Structures are given as C-alpha cells and as structure tokens.
Image 1 (spheres, helix red, strand yellow):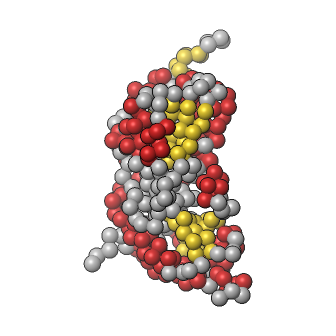
Image 2: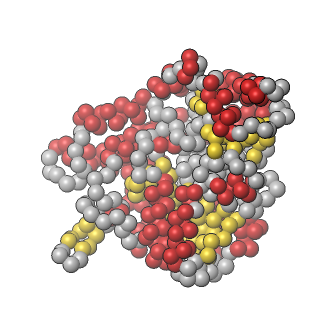
Amino acid sequence: MEKIIDARKIREDFPILKVRPYGKSLIYFDNAATTQKPESVIKAIDDYYSGMNANVYRSAHYLSGVATNAYEEARNRVAKFINAGSENTIIFTRNATESINLVAYTWAMDNINEGDEIILTVAEHHSNILPWQMVADRKGAKLRYVYLNEDSRLDMASYKDMLNSRVKLVAVQHVSNVLGIINPVEEITEMAHKVGAKVLIDGAQSVPHMRVDVRKIGCDFFAFSGHKMMGPMGIGILYVKKELLNSVPPFLRGGEMIDEVYEDRATFAVPPLKFEAGTPNVEGAVGLSAAIEYIEGIGLDNIHSHEAELTQYALEKMREIDFVDIYGPRDMRDRGGVISFNVADIHPHDVSTILDQDGIAIRSGHHCALPLMRYLDVPATCRASFYIYNDMDEVDVFIDSLKNVRKWFKWS
C-alpha cells in the first residue's frame, strides 16, 4: 500500500532535520510548540530581503510596490486557506496570543459589562485565559469553565446548561495542545449564537493539521500562528467576521492605520489596515504564504491522516508500557497528533532530558495550561506531538528510549 506521506522524502526539505544532537539522528516530536521550516519558506524570506525589502504602502517607488503586493498576496492566500470569504477579514498580528489580546482589549472591553459571563474550558492555553481574566476583572464580568467528561472530552451537556442571556463570549480552543482533543466548534458556536453570544476560536493547534473553514464554523473570531504551520515566528492571524469589522475599534494606534490626523482627533483606515499600526512583519507574511503553499502541496487531508496513523500507532505502543500514564482520549475519535503522558515516579523534566540524549525532542512542563494540570492533579506532563516529517520508525525509537528511562534510575 502506497504511503499517503513519505516522511523520509519530506525530511529532505527541512535543513534543520540534518542536525545530529549528541551524534544521534534528530527526532523532533515538539511540533505543538513550534514546527520546523522547509527550504522553500527559508528561501522566500531570503528572497524578500534580497529582492524586495521596503516598507509597505508608504512609498511610490518600485520596491515598495513589490513589497506591498507580496504582503497583500499573503493576506489573500491566508483568507483562501481558511475560507474567510474576504481578505479584509484577515488581520496580521505577531502571534495567536496577540490576536486574542486584540479582541480582549477592543471588542470585549466595549461589549462586556458588569454581570456578563464569559465561558472558557479548563483545557485552554494560558493565552486564551489570561486576556479574559483581565476583561472580567476590569468589567466586573464572571468567568465560567466547561470541564471534561469521563473520556477526557468537553462535557457538552454542562456547556449547554451554562448558556444563558448573560453569556457574551465563548472562547474555546479548536484542538487541545495537551490532550489532543478536537472540540466540536461548529456545535459550540451554533449553541452560543442562540443566546446572542460571540465566539472566539483559538486555532493555533488546528490550522496546521486539518482543514479549517471559518465560515462553516460560523465563529466571530479565529486566531492562529504562523510558526506552528511551518511559517516564521512573529506572524499571527486574527480572522474577524466581516459583519463585525467596522464595530471593532483599533488596538494599537500610530503609523499607517489612519485615514486623517488632526491636532485633536483622528479617523482610521478601513479594515484590516486600521488594526495594523506601524511597520508590519512583511517578511513574516511572505514566509507564511510560502508555508501555506507547501502545506497545500501536500494536502491537509493527507497531513491529518498521516498524523492520525502515527498517533494511533504511538498510543498502542505506549499502552504496552505499564509504567506510562497517558492523559486524554485513548481512541482516535476527534483526536489530533498530541500525546501527553508521564512515567511513574520520574519527573517529566527528567524524562525529557533522558530522551534528549537519544536525539528525541519532546516537551515537558505544564504546557501553558496550569488550570488543566490542576484538574488532572499532576504538576506537569511530557508531550509528544507529530507532524509531516515524522514516521513510525521514529516512533519505534521513541518507544525504545521510553522503555529505558527508568533504567537511568536503576529501576527495571
């Protein structure tokens, strides 16, 4: 049977995967933190600085025109990639965190008031908790949390019971960076809209790995980052539903986001430019565009299937190790390529350090999800997360190394 994705061949596109830590082949299982970059993305950034570097919009000369076209072409590519409907709904930020903060400091501060409610989930990344804590604290609103059911997925019955006319916002991750659960965001959004609430989706862990259609989801805001989808760091995206664009005030104020400026007042540019004050990360947008082109060349359905196959294989092998505890769903229904686990009696940082000696890069810690760690009653976990350049041979090396972890402490 022909492989959907030939990871060995794909690895040839990634210069960093030739690095040999401690003389070992690099096995990079930290993709939920950031992904590696193919040569085409690196070249696109180099080409920008070599052949078109200029500030966008502001000048009439040749280079500025070329740079501006490249920047707007990137915006258009992003819009098509998530089926936004219009490039004007795509706002470039530094990362998903800034995208969420933009909504918190603008729309939320204008529309959430004392006594209102904001619904989150206990599994959220800190970036989708802290901004809403700030809003609730300043505006006198209340945060409410959806917890998990017995199979480590969202308790949708509890969520339904929470919805009422006081709820003004539901902010939820599309895919958990710890548990790998894929949340039913279409259903969540539809239910929220019935009580008049807006919905923000943190898509940092979904956009790189599966097809995302923001108009099908129906959400009002959708945030994600370039660096988790083989693009450069420092470029993020916020999608804002077209109907809301004009009612959301600017976040930062300064150059390029204005229409007219007087001594005592100013008017602002039309969206999305009114949200992009100052010199933007043009090379980041160009690199992101190249990353999307690379992803589209492989196919998101192929990527999702490849990761599901790897995750299923890894889960089966890990279940055979009696001293390994796995967190999150044990089956692959609505599950992404993330596995959080612990080795009995050994701290996750020690596990990560030992695996590192075999060239295996995983994440250890609380994964910016301390409320979830407390809910799971653990101080931290290890996390392996997969992408297109990983394969089953690497999983086998990981499993063998995992079996040997306890031997470092003289335990069999």
